Length: 228
Ligand code: ZN
Image 1 (cartoon, protein in one colour):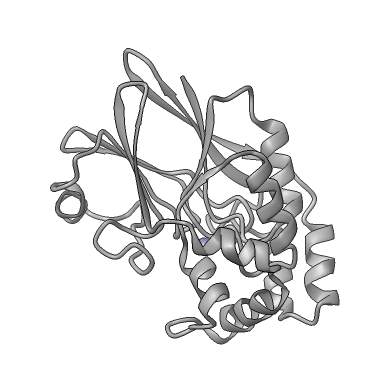
Image 2 (tube, helix red, strand yellow):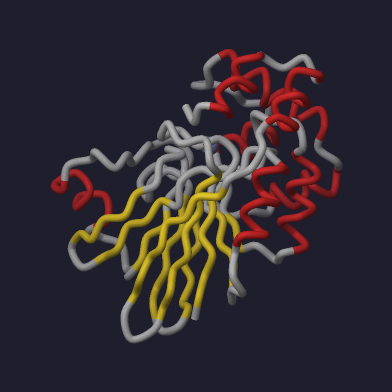
């Protein structure tokens, strides 16, 4: 069984399309949150996610676009969140509102736990690849899971800890590891589990132009070319 793992699409339709086209035939696609926020095509991205029958959890930007609660957001992120809230169709508000804050799946005999930030703070905590083993162990020790899929940092990660595999597929729509290519991962589940992190070249120009044309902060456009 092969599962596509994505996170942090952030309304970047061009990057999302490029990733979907790059994917081989998969049994499922799982999204670790933040379909919307930052770029300008939230409805197009949500519609595409629906058509692919994505299994998704809620991210902090999804939540902010639903509630307009931007506490803890920097001014640029907050502006984009409110802009997104104004743009979302009622059907897509409904879809995003129904996203759970975590998913506990059983696929191919393995237990897969999906959350945007971390199990102890689903929308808020960042788990970066630099996290020390003892910290990560504390986060995952009580989880009844074989695989834990995270998002939020926009940085790819893969770590085996206490017999549990922790994966962040990286950011589709706004990578932050200095590599502007869209990031995702393929999880292969069989006798053993394998993860393959992948990067997909796409042209951020169109997304950037739409961000500028919408009057959103230029920084949101510029960063797409550099991956930060
Ligand atoms: Zn994000």
